[in-house]
Length: 597
Ligand SMILES: [Zn+2]
Ligand SMILES: [Zn+2]
Image 1 (cartoon, rainbow, N blue to C red):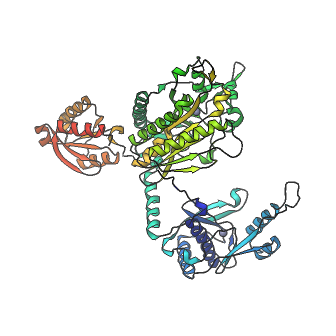
Image 2 (image 1 turned 90 degrees about the vertical axis):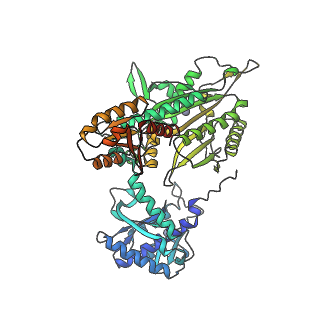
Image 3 (image 1 turned 180 degrees about the vertical axis):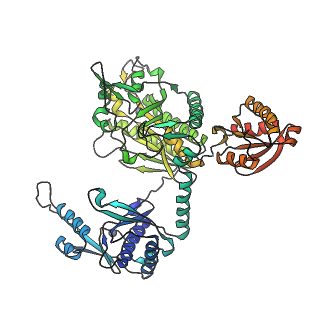
């Protein structure tokens, strides 16, 4: 399978287009407030660009429309972007009315000195880019001329406040966000995605569908799973655990806290302390909430003398871990402080290792596909150039095994040369959701560090001690995050096998309630999760509410159905399947569940 060429975004044409559009926008804003606008910084960012301004008044939507119209004029002028190098003194003279630029120039100037205040032999180059009537302190790169920006593929999005240099003690600036693409259809698709992402926001759907909540009284980043969410999680875990057992894993369980000594041995207190919850004192010992499950699994491995005959050993655990994340980065279920990993550690002999990696990757894809994901992007991260632990031969063998597994899997992948952790190479897998966003979930990661620190070994055929390969792997990653991705991927309409309520029985009038209860009981006997809507609402209101709850099957019943032992089946898609015998519906539902549709 060909290795996917992944062009660095910063080196792509669209990056130049976006950064150039930021300059064009700045010119238009400057012209709107002649002699009054102060401009700060304006980089290209993921999917677009922004520029920060210090303006005499707040921008209105009307202003944005004017700026956008003026941008199109400037773009059509085909003005070249010209680069110029200049001295710090000249730069300060050029930006004499622009205090933010002067501060940036001074920063560059200071950067020309080493930490003892001695001038560096090669001072940083100060450069400007000019297009039409606008000159910015800028390193580039840019397009050759404004005509290379597609005027039909540029749009300003919104304005928000941003502190100068992100410092709340500095002035609050107005940040205009915009986006630019190569073609108008690309812009359309992007705008559609943004709208669609809002509708699918798992925080909104989590509330609407009563799946989970976060409560400041509990603590930031700590998730409460409500009955419906917890049921989905139970179904996901139950499926995964069965698959793990069928795939040769052993399930283990370990405590949520461990002695400081353990985390010293593992090295977490040295290199991971900032991400750990503070210690708890007890019996003259310090205990720490676990940020990872590995040391516990290693202790299980080390609880006996292992023979080469026992390997590979695969320990899997739905292990809850706690990590300190800064308040500013917490985000719904996607970034939390307490989460459960579908974690496993594999210990194997060198001769077993390549096959083991193949098997792990195949299993990973099987699990992700079972949840309805079909598009994957794989990344192979190799040995970092700087510090790393482990022998060269181990690294080579491990990287070869990872590369071989990727080649054999048929997945396209990108190689991140030197992008591995200091303790081992890895494969990261991202899944694409229904609207094309990528989510990092799975990882298969070698660890030469823990293996040595905990003196992992087994007795080989000649009776000598040897170090096994140790592999960490998580497939869904974190249950919380994966659930968040599932909510957004399906917009809450999970496949039938995962729905908390699979069928809503809807009696048309009170006199049909008895029949409705009888049918519901029959369906429950057949293993379906069913509710009966006995409210005295009109049928259409009941259908609408069930649809809002994304319930896959709505079974409407009136006199005709009751007389014929039938149900009228409507799907959440709006499709009306008409009346059918109860038995037929049960078969239809069971088939859908079995197919995991
Ligand atoms: Zn620039
Ligand atoms: Zn681990």
